[in-house]
Amino acid sequence: MNALKAVFWDYPALASPSGLTSFLDEHKARPRVYRWLLSRFLEHGRAVDALHYFSVREISEALPGLRLSPYSMKKWRRIVEVYGHAQGR
Image 1 (cartoon, helix red, strand yellow):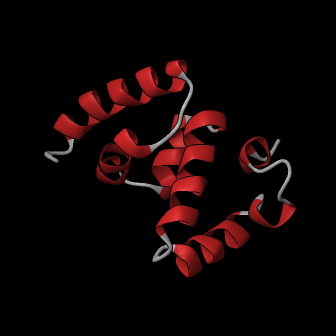
Image 2 (cartoon, rainbow, N blue to C red):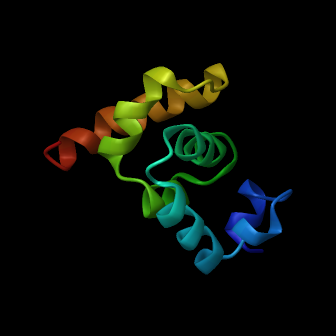
């Protein structure tokens, strides 16, 4: 199964790597849309996929302003803590 379909089951145009990359590039300067995309990944995607499209630093900086489930927030805080230090943030 395409891992992006788990994140964007309701947006078929974003469920392909090329479609998602285009959309990210096009909307990176629109913080609200960008945070929405990031939130979808952090809630519904695998960590490996989220880290393919977003850096640990981007995730770390965005976390305080995102509305995530308590489970996802805890998981991503821990990932940022572990991998942020490993990458020399």
